[in-house]
Length: 370
Image 1: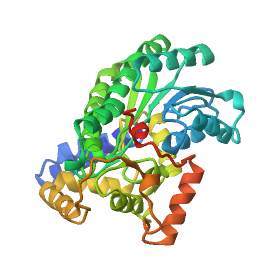
Image 2: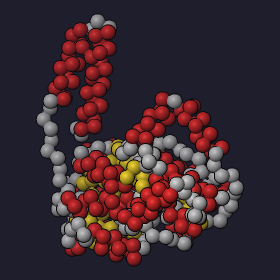
Image 3: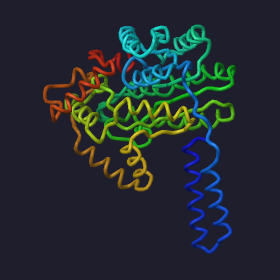
Image 4: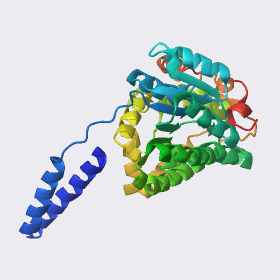
């Protein structure tokens, strides 16, 4: 039983003991109290180490994927990074070589939405390292704009990248894990897969679908020593707004999205998130919401769904209204007035430099429709 499950069990047993006291069931209360104590003082399993393990990270050349790779190589892991841009992969390898020897880093140019390319990437990794211990499905893209500006192509591209690519990768990794008697999968979902926000409908739709798949596959694989950790980040400082794709009033859409992405107290440092994610996988935790603001948002949606929906409606009223089917990357949409404070702009630029985010001017490529 992982640490989080143990805490949840103790909480429920403690509530049961309290309720039993209130209803005069003293023997039951005593039994539950003893059970809670037994769980609390049960022998802790020694923490698993990722030293010497092999990890495959999709979308590993920049952003959160690069932060996860850094965390793993510092711990002694060998990593294979998958991405479509070979130049970005080479820069990522150069960056990670500051923290480990270059021979512990393998890069593979791969479009994860192409099943044959994904199969070849995994097989090449097994030939190179001998096996795979951890698969991190991290590759992703974001499209922002009002629903009227979106097309079925936008929805299909997001589903293909966030859902079908993960299903294919999981299907291909399972025989490898079964041969070695177990393994770990990390699926990077999003708080957008728990609570939808306006002007991100293709993204929200795909992340809700990924959440459903991930929860179901977690249960099905639990008896095979294959753990699945689904991660629901809220906003993170990964430098990704310049890579996102914007439609409608692109400049204004970029402004609200980019400012929220670096706002103090609202966004989480990518390296902090990476640390939490690896620790959750180490403990075989099934779900992780790595930020307080994310946990509050999720709890509010469960306890007060009507109020949360009203808040989302208010948020939508404040958003840009112009429609346009034109695609623009964040790098194309940003202006000198995009950030409300220079300090926020410096924060964004720092994240971009730290996590290998470079300006792109091909939105169709970023979205995966070219």
